[in-house]
Length: 349
Image 1 (tube, one colour):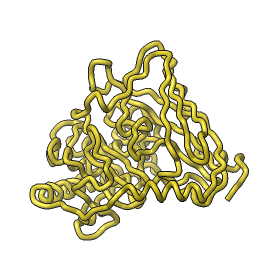
Image 2 (cartoon, helix red, strand yellow):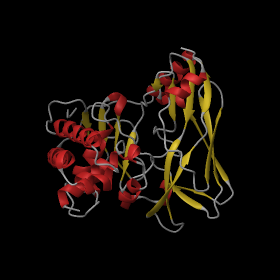
Image 3 (cartoon, rainbow, N blue to C red):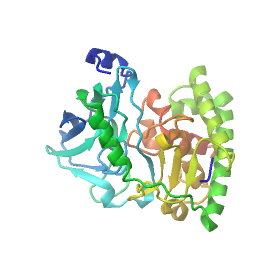
């Protein structure tokens, strides 16, 4: 860790990985093209009850989080934006979006801002994941609703897409790391804690309880154990040094993404992690609570987002109850699953 092409659409479909197409529980998401690379998502609540869904960190967020998955004939197009991590106890009403029963909301976004589409040609676009929700008079998450949109085709002009991405990138200014004083002390402690958690989790993934692997990753197969252990090995290496590694560690909001409830975020395409003020004020270095949040497991979570470690996603949700709702394929690529497994191994949950 450093402290500092047009092809047939049929081919695109073949390039898309097999996904769990669970029926949405009353939540319908329809995507529509709105120009060269702009997309409109219409989200309709077809359920009997109104929904108060988490907006922060999901495709409803206006910040540079992942709004959709983009595919070319060669596979998924890398996402170049931010992966955020939320502090559940610091969420306010501003972090949520209400969708009354029978009504729709719309969000607009430009896939060229956070994906390199400069080659142009045909692309497939879809949005999938889950939205956590709370009671109308609360900010405590009590469940999640999965969604899987239609896939749409876009014929993208590469020059226009490049101009969009360049213009968006210029809005972001990278400043030098300022991990000093108490923040520097906390950073060293959190990185040390992260390395220790990862080493113990690696051993558990290699030869620990089958039941624990199934609980968190839905599988205890040799392949799953190997994949999970490899991720923890890379986390331990990344957190084990403050002068070497793949990523830079910032203590300032260099991307402008420290919005409501955000503890930290990672920009995989730029190989850095940024830790918000909330990370230093709301969390201790370690917790004694099963599935509790702490600085050490937060660093584990963020590190998994790095492309060189795993390139995980959040799927729009956090916490133990959310990971239990995911499939095996999702859990093995879900950042919080790795953080929570490490916490469980450490505390014997």
